Amino acid sequence: MDRPLVIDGTAVGIERRPEPGPGAEHPDTRWRRRFEAGRGRHSGIRAVDVTDLGDLGGRRRALGRSLATFQLGESGTGEHLFGAAVSAGVSDDHLSALRSFVAEEQEHARLLALVLDGLHVACRVQHWTDRVFVLIRRSRTLRSEVLTLLVAEVIALSYYGALRDGVAHPALRDVFARIHADEVGHVDFHAETLPPYLRRFGRVGQRLVRVLWNTLVAGAAVVVALDHGGALAAAGVDRRQFIRSVHRDRRDLERRLFGDASADRVRRRAGRLNSRSRRAPAR
Ligand SMILES: [Fe+2]
Ligand SMILES: [Fe+2]
Image (cartoon, rainbow, N blue to C red; front, side, top):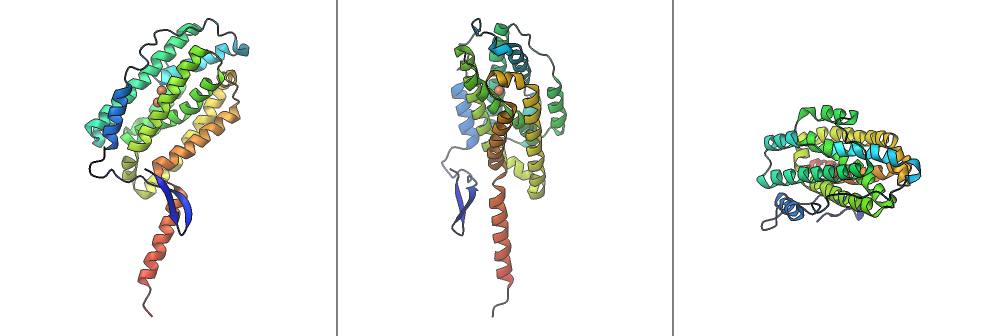
């Protein structure tokens, strides 16, 4: 378990989770089993009845358009992700967990397609944000694939959370609650399994990637707030609230992926002081 890191009596952050000891279940295995245990839990939903949804204060169309964009984003095949995972040398359990993760995203796409059907809104076949994501993922490493996915995952937490809490319709709320709960699990999965691969960047590379990833999430939050403002307003959330919510989740996930920057600084400073004191001549 993570625990507070205390240096000179001051809590400076969270200590990184140690590698599992002998006998402990490896995270890859735990996640493979967890995904398997949850398989098929949404399969009973074959239609979403929204006949009594109403006009949502004139924002019903905006909600439909917004959901169509998210539906497209959820419907990837994972083909490049799996290829990158194999190239990175992941374990069989990790690869299996990644396949289950993509299957869950496709299940979200199916649920959202049912909602769109109820709203009489056509599914999208392309959107410019999807093309941007494809460009960013061009390097096709597990790290770039998952970090790019995590931009969307962090956005999804605030988006589906807002719709779950703000759209007063039981069937829709149920769908958004299911998707949101899965997205929380997805973020936990990647936060636990990606860091060993991020460490392959080296210290300077990690700092650079960290800044880039933060910038991407911050930019994406603004784009989504602008592009999906009508849907968010239907849930009673304004653009600033949405951006603040993404910002909070981003900071939390950043620490889990890259470690606590302030704690790392203190640790490095302590290391420098130690090595200086070791070099100092004895009096
Ligand atoms: Fe999803
Ligand atoms: Fe997800």
